Image 1 (cartoon, one colour):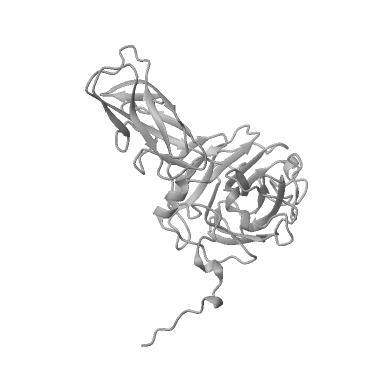
Image 2: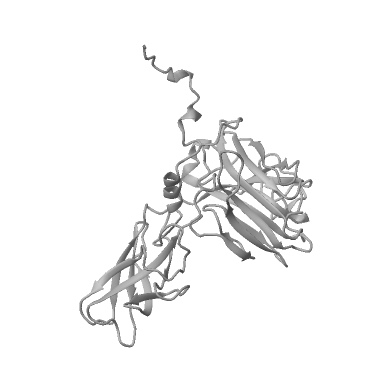
Length: 366
């Protein structure tokens, strides 16, 4: 059988991969683990997706990597309002978002007449059938654009696409800072929904973008209401292509640029275990000693915030263990490749012929 050469000129360049600007869009990676009783902004559940809020009064949510998705997806990002907000006041909002690093967005050509359109596609399911807001915010130019999507049937996976115009008036710096984020609005007060921002415009003090006038707040005001998402893709062009499925290893490595740990994958942060820890021997009694360097799996986006954990006492921070005894810990020489860890100022110091052991996390999220 003759083998014919593929005509590359006839292929869409998007078929070659690396077209999805979103990391962990299939919700495969969950380094931090699931969280209950969440009341404040932060990273919980699947990596790279941030729960963001302002003005909370009553609500509490659970955020998890649910073992539930449409055909072809094993996981989703799930928010459940375990305690509902009584009402969404003017200044309040709740979002789920992912911030894309600025230097990864230069091909969007913002600020020129060739500024590229972006299309977001995703699978979504909610116990509330309603219209929801979705938007993008661009940091360096302080600009915003939004749209809506409608969940037609409760508790049913539905596929949605939204196309955003290119921003001919914007700018994205070529650096490792905040570039632009894609956000899904779960609640927005009146100050955040007074104008439907369907074209790029300057963000104006909370008056634009967090929610459309038609978007619902019902998830956050209904006890045990749920909202789930997976297959999140953001790509150049006016057409959504098939989701770019990456291997677990590829997604984990991309996530490590923003957050990594010494713990074995699947072990909860704060667990009293030495598995995967940084360790080193001490051969003489000494008040100041080090177990070694925490070497990050990949170059991190910036010098991270490092937290150390005891290996013998669960959920105990700021400690390095020496043969079952904790002592005060510190970090120094913070870089983007590794961090020096040390133990000092114990009353008795560290005894001779001991092993120092410590677990740690490093965060350089946008």
